[in-house]
Length: 73
Image 1: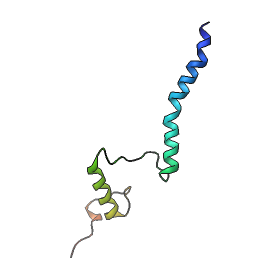
Image 2: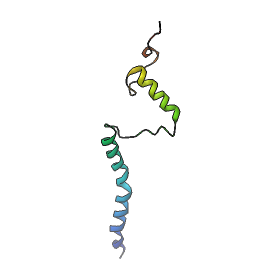
Image 3: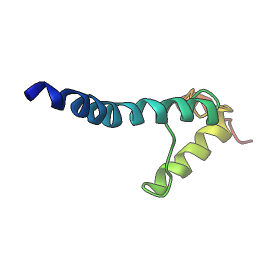
C-alpha cells in the first residue's frame, strides 16, 4: 500500500536534514565556538581586511572606526 513508502521518505528526509546541523556542530567544536568557517579563497580581499582589523583593534570581531587607528608622530 501507499504507507509502505513512509519509512523511505523518513530516511531520505533525515539524510537531507541532518548534515547542515552536523556541520554546524563540527564547526563549533573545531573553530573555537564559531558556527561558520571562513573561506578566504573565495574573497581574498576580505582576508586583508580581517588582518587589518585584527592588527588595529586586537579582535576581528570588534570593528572600530578611525578612532581605533593609532596616531603616528
